[in-house]
Amino acid sequence: MSVQSMADRINPLGSYLTINSKKEWIGIPLRVHRRCISPMFEISNNIAYDNTMYCSTPSPKSVNINFQTSFIHCKGHVEGRHFVQEQAEKVKEILINEININKNLPDVFVITPFREIGYLLNSFLFKHLINEVKKHKEIDSSEMGDWLKSHIGTVHTFQGKQAEGVILCLGLDEITKGAANWASQKPNLLNVAITRAKYRFIAIGDKEIWLKQAYFNQLSKLNTEVQ
Image 1 (spheres, helix red, strand yellow):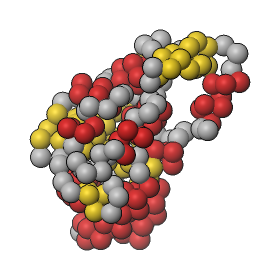
Image 2 (cartoon, one colour):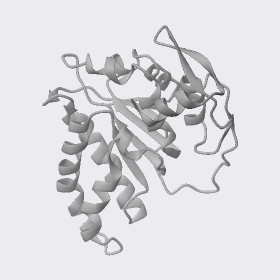
Image 3 (cartoon, helix red, strand yellow):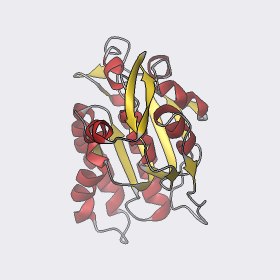
């Protein structure tokens, strides 16, 4: 049982919401949301709070992230259980662009539903990003390993944390798509992932798998790029 589920159970104030055709008790959250801006707020409010929240997150005067909020449709074949190399390549491309433009390690979390993807992304990105980092004297390349450890992981790794931007690497292919059913059993996983992002959010995955799942189908509201 997650911390959120335990908190819901002991909260005497709340309401029943229908989740997967079952009514579940959801404790009353703080009604004012100050974590993220549109469209992350609207998706979170829809899937997790039955549109009962109010957004008071101020729009930033400037954002140090260059990518735009979107869903990137990226197909591929799974290596192992969940990891898709083509999606890892897209994550690498986005991060290299951020490093080269801003000349620093970006305030971006790379989040995934699956532990295997986080582990393989860490080693893959270190191998490919370290040379980019060394091109910029403004960046201490010795910090690369620690940055990856603190900025890549599963959804639960980042509970209570925020960054200017989030990349959600979803994984899976046609053969392994059944694992998406687990990820979409409740709104919690997507809700935590999308609300880690203050200003920018990218989801990378196969739209034929993920945009057909409960809760994740709300990502269709984002601009879609096809790779």
